[in-house]
Amino acid sequence: MPMTHAGGNVPIRAVFGGLTDVGHKREHNEDHILVRVDLGLFILADGMGGHNAGDVASKLATSSLVSFFEATRGQTYFGIPPEGYDHLDVDGLRLLFGIIKANEDVYRVSAAAGAHHGMGSTIVATYITRDGTVHIGHVGDSRCYRISDGEIEQLTHDHSFVNDVLRAKPDMDPEQLAHLPQNIITRALGMREEVEPSIRSEPTIPGDVYLLCSDGLSGQVSREEIHRIVGTGQNPQQACQMLVDASNAAGGKDNVSVIIIRVDPAQPRIPAPSVAVCRRCGSPNTPGVATCQRCGSPMH
Image 1 (cartoon, rainbow, N blue to C red):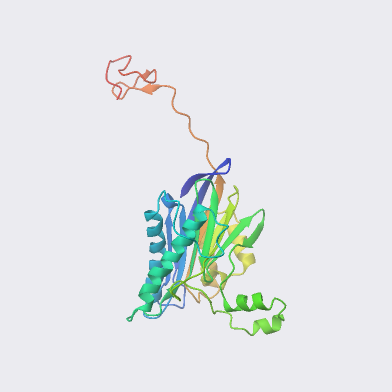
Image 2: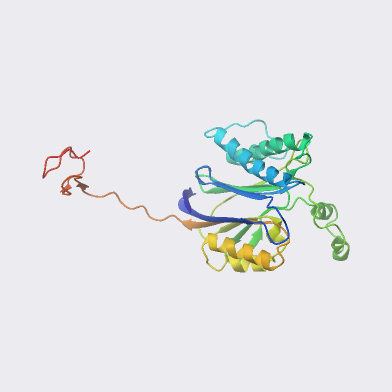
């Protein structure tokens, strides 16, 4: 399914697909994906919590972000940004504050007593604006990759215990690193009252492909295999199915979700017809005439 924007001076057309799957080992799918073409939003969330609370968290995270965008159409001020986000333009700030609002909504339910107490969710979202810029925001270990010029690059940095240790000790021995807990995330929506999303922005370029995924893909399928599958030239929906199949073939230990967005050059517009056709007799007429030049019927 396509959407069309202008990327700088180059019109672009974003063609996308998405898929989520429970996998082979889990009883419930706690991932959720949501695409709103009219808002330029592509969202993926990976929930956590017992008794299906993760499913509630991921759906609330995605719907809350969409609701924020619906409520802020045409708005250019969203509040004073937290420290460290001064570099963002108005669209980047919109994504930032949208994720912050999603955290507030998830935390409100998570902090309350009841079946959903302690629930949380990761989130990764891309927001493609009408000038062709893509803004990428995330919390947790759900990822965004870009495949461009034959290379694959991870654009998000997992909010994980391992990465926090590496940030403090970048020269840590690989053997020591291998003994650290690998699946602990240090940020998630609903984990705390406040959240620190990571936001980055870049221009879209025709030919680029963006992949959003949960750790059910990145933890099961190698980056090289992901690159190979996305680079096969399949349409985005077919590539999504191939990625999910690869995750399940590797054991399907977790829910797996993917969204693929391919940036194509916009298709040329079909020129307006040089004649007006009468609805009654089908005769061609000079554009703009009030009545048919042959049968006299009204043209409108």
